[in-house]
Length: 36
Image 1 (cartoon, rainbow, N blue to C red):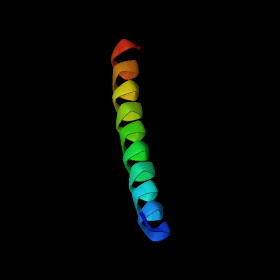
Image 2 (cartoon, rainbow, N blue to C red):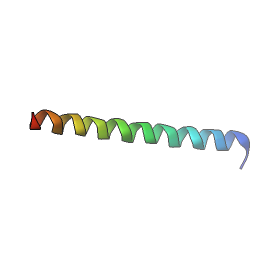
Image 3 (spheres, rainbow, N blue to C red):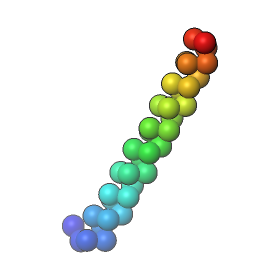
């Protein structure tokens, strides 16, 4: 793998992780509202 390939792969991983985290947080907030 070349350096630029590694960089773009890493950026894709980070984006996927952030998207997953924000979706999880969104679900958590919804559940929290229901429980209040």
